[in-house]
Each structure stands twice: as C-alpha cells, then as structure tokens.
Length: 89
Image (cartoon, rainbow, N blue to C red; front, top):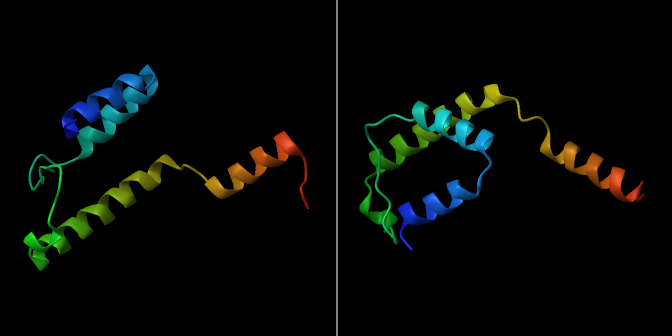
C-alpha cells in the first residue's frame, strides 16, 4: 500500500468533524519544501541543512499546534482511569 492509499484509508475512517480539522491543519502546511516520502528513506541522503530545515519546520508546526490547547493528556488519562476503575493507590 502506498503512502497515499494509506492516507486515504485513514481519512475515510475519520468522522466528518475530524476530517474538517485535518483539512484546516493541512492548509497551514506550506506547499514548498515538501519531501515526498517513498516506502523507504535513507536519512543520509539529506544534507545537514535539510535536516535543520525539517527540524525548524517541525518546531514551527509545534508552536502552531499549541494554540489548539490539547491539555495535559497524562492528566486526562489518569482521570479517565480513575473514573472507570476508581482510585488505584
């Protein structure tokens, strides 16, 4: 299965609201400097500057995603476990 086919199958499984969120995030991604991912990537093919650009882009995306305020996922998980099973300690 190619990356594109895998992406389509994952998107098909999402509810409409999640697809809308995914589309809005995709629109934030730049059209330039994209790397097409084949089945296997040899990371040594990329120069240091390519790696630095990729890291910088990842940092930019992390800062952008911070505005969605996902909250403390560990705390949410602990609360859900406590709610379902009661206090364990």
